[in-house]
Amino acid sequence: MAIKKNMTLRKSKRNRIDGIDIFAHAFNLIWSLLILYPVLNVLARSFSGNYAILANKVTIFPVDFTLQSYAYVFENPRIIRSFGNALLYTAVGVTCNLAATVLMAYPLSKTKLIGRSFIMRAMIFTLYFNGGMIPTYMLVSKLGMLDSMWSLIIPNIIYTNNCIIMINGFRATPESLYEAAYLDGAGDFQVFIRIALPLAKATIASLGLFYFMGHWNDFFTPMLYLNTSDKMPLQVVLRNMLIEEEAIGRDPGAVSLTPEGIKGAIIFITMVPVMIIYPFVQRFFVGGVMIGSVKG
Image (tube, rainbow, N blue to C red; front, side, top):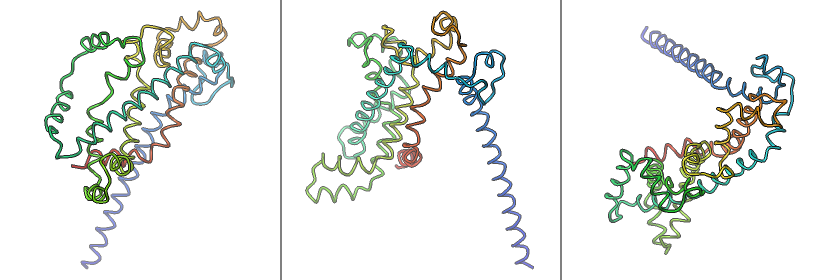
């Protein structure tokens, strides 16, 4: 009788878990579709004809397939130049961010570092208080970085949250590995290059993705520090086009096109680098963040 009762309870629990799983999967599917629909709609508009867009016939599939919007984008020197600027700023920015974060996090991961406690408190202090926009702008101006690429990189070269994650990522490596390397005659630089960095590559890749998304999607910082239109990244050009449809209408090359189609083409082009990079970083993402967040 007891065995039968236990089997009944186990079956009931399994059915309840299955029901929860079904609900969770259904909810995630619906939520994913709600998020995906606007993206597919924008993509479909970029490949659709003018009449179909104006008649609001486009949903998630192109109507009257055409590549005119993309032809306009790739023939427009302003858009091509801004796309190149965005790639340059992002590549240099991510490289500098990762280098500075790693070089600061590695010594701070050593509990015996003199002054470590003071530096950590100073870093955490910046999470609650900062200089503000106007003092930062004045500092950038005094340093002569206005209207240059470095004004987008130097002021935010290290993010405190990312540095803390990187510190914990280095601390996840067993101390015995470092001690064994020192016993074998390795110096500090060799230990850093051959042990610390390779074992922390998951965390580094995850932070690289964070920094990449931050630079690639940023339009406010360039608007604040850059004055020359030829130096603006793609995100600023896209932002201006999204809020100024009249500017597209006045362009002779876009007379036969709709602003929605051109906007859709530009938005999709901005998504391409993210879609290319993310699959390569995804396998490091979850593990790197978990290691950097959980380890003491």
